[in-house]
Image 1: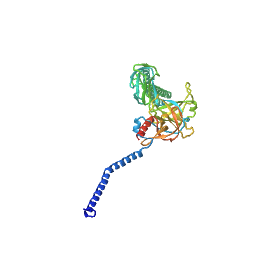
Image 2 (image 1 turned 30 degrees about the vertical axis):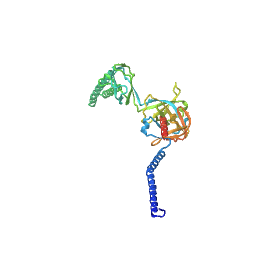
Image 3 (image 1 turned 60 degrees about the vertical axis):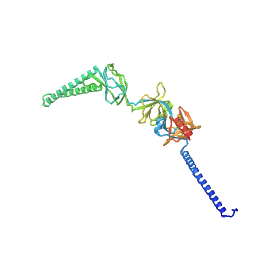
Image 4 (image 1 turned 30 degrees about the horizontal axis):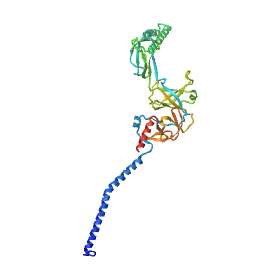
Length: 394
């Protein structure tokens, strides 16, 4: 049977076309269903990686102040000045003239009581030891005798005054009584002053050793029961708030320094303390042949008398320059470049600098850093290590 032009042939063609259409549409839907999630995930991952790369700042180390302090990183505010303008000198912390008192025995005697030990706090005028002394008894006796003489002279004067007013005695008797009273009162004042200066106790047996200033006992040589001579040093009391730094400089450098010049005190560990020049000695030390510059540290500094340190004095007469001096440890080498780590709000930024001369542990920065910036000095190598770790991760 011929089916080329029959209705049966037409129906077969229509059915076959429908099957092809369904198969093609289903394949497209299946392809979209399987491939769409993978494409979306890839696009999101690429977006996240791009965001990370955009948020990364080259040479930046994120670190807050608390973490930097716990890591031992010390910062310094940079100032203008070449190494040639700065005067480097060794110094020692010493008590100010009104910051230390030497307590001595006012008379010969034996130490019978002690109330303070080395390191104890002391108030001004507080007694910290007592001496049993024959001088105390003598001073007390003089005071009592003078008081008795004043009483007798006053009684005689009052009697002579009444008799003179009654015209019974002559004027010369009245004036003699008045002069005797004045003499007795003067003697009493002298004996009282002597007893007070020697700190004689009320019973007249002991002398008190009192502190002239408030502070702490820094030296205690008194021993209970020991017999000491007048003028023997028994204690030293120092006020830790009243200190100065004595810096030794060469004569040529001393002539460049004037009162009011600023200085920087360098402590062990990289910490620094600001100071001001107070005065300079007009002569040289007989043995060392150096002059002494007296520096007054800024308030709040924690320095201890006897502590050795190094100071940098910046004379005001030095030629102005844009170069900056920093400790050598502040400059680190990163990928062959000299950098310093500048403090920012959220961390430290590695900044490329140009280095000049080096001297006595200091390095001159001639370009790349502005005065007033805060840079890391001690512990800068830790920031370099953190920077290397961060760059490796990225």
